[in-house]
Length: 83
Image (tube, rainbow, N blue to C red; front, side, top):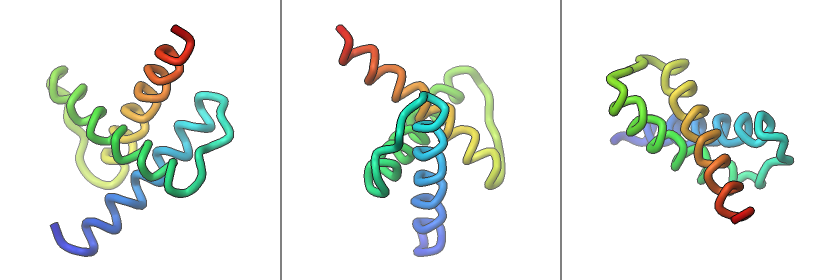
């Protein structure tokens, strides 16, 4: 992975984490928290979509995958905290 790819990965993670926090009625988790949420969400989203046989390409597809994964991750975290 080159430097530019790594920077894009972090930027997509940041945007996905921030959007997921807004969608799930949160206030965000700060810059580092949003990046971590988005990066883990992108991994989770890629895994989930892989199980379903769905794949997206390009920048928008990566963002959608990361966003959906981050929303699922936030839902799971909040579900576990309530239990």
